[in-house]
Length: 141
Image (cartoon, rainbow, N blue to C red; front, side, top):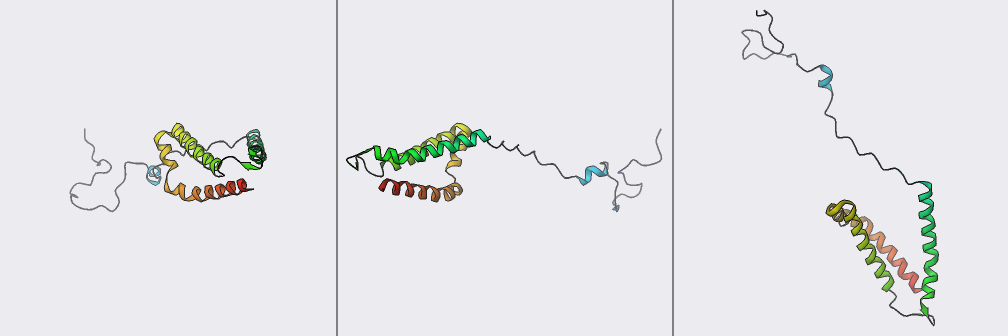
């Protein structure tokens, strides 16, 4: 048994090649109005706890307080027995090596490559140079 009414989305008989102004859609109107949803953003990491913040602060204070004492302790008759830049260069090289290893351990080769991106070097390179200059001036004192 055939129905006399045409199925939705089919042109009426004799309308082949004619353009209809608005054809009904098989999709509900709500589905037409929504845009495809983007992938869910990763959940941001939780901020460090107050205990962690205090521990980092205490570590920084102790490190900075002990540094001049260690410099004085390493002097013999008021003179340093090594080149003044040796601790600075050693510190900076160890920092580079350890942070590259951390990037490699956390994200693999992708993490290692991120350490050497030009955008990162432009931002953190000058900051590192200022810190190295400060360390050098501290060694002169």
